[in-house]
Image (cartoon, rainbow, N blue to C red; front, side):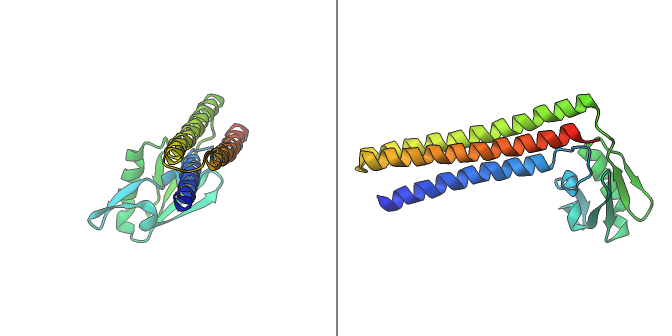
Length: 188
């Protein structure tokens, strides 16, 4: 029974960590007026007979805060990179000079900043829902374990630990969301 309880506690914490990690990945893709290689991390091109992420066929770097440079290792991939960026509908027009593709991120309007802030809050709420669902599932398993012979005291103590984990990861989500909102609202 102790092993089951330990496994349950590890599993719930991993689940909550995954929710926070997913949030971090989602927030990294939110374009906050700054150029970031994460903006194109999901963009794939047709190269060498397969769909490949751009960062596997090119060097992706920041030239400055607003400009991303994509320099393919094989120049023949340049048109495919441009086409994939257009198709990804990032709201940025790629500019090619025959050597590399440049993406210049336009400054955010106030309205766009507010939309992004709403999107960020939505990501945060989705993450919190995932954390609460993990808590709910763990509490249900815990109740079943009490029915199967786990002492009620251990059950109550474990329930308190699960609630503490929920609070801890909920606070992490709040912190990430607040930080990203400030970043979006303060960009020039």
